[in-house]
Length: 202
Image (cartoon, rainbow, N blue to C red; front, side):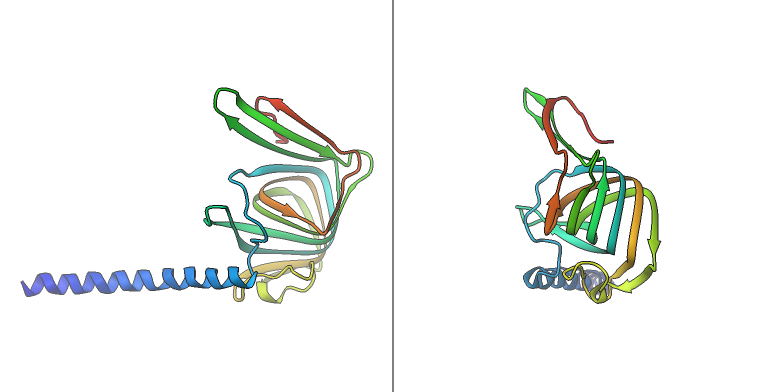
């Protein structure tokens, strides 16, 4: 009998060791949300979208981990890319919605084929990014709360990994994201269309 009670005590101790850090992290995220420290400036939809560009050039680059929140108040981990001033050529954005009976519906947006798209204080909350990147004066492994090269608001939580650079150039950009917001977003040659079927940027 004593042996079984001993096992029970060990199991509860293990449970407490595993549970307390999880509770602390959740509480920390709650405080960060209340203070506006996370990337939750608005509730994100339940759909990610794809963005591609022939090239992106930016001044004042910062990147750090953060969390978005949807309308159900679920937390979604993201990598935030923040750029003070960005220019994109041959921009494409797409999202596919699957509807009952109708099937897949695709919304596509293109811009910047002749004149680059311009954005100031651009934030992209992404889950995937690829391309060929060149950075100038990059700092890798900086504390996310001390970032100072990107937009003023581009800072993450203390002790988290981050990187920043004076400038960035990315060719053949491909990314999947939950949200994008910018201080200003100038789309030259904008074209938007909705069509049946699955039509994505990549």
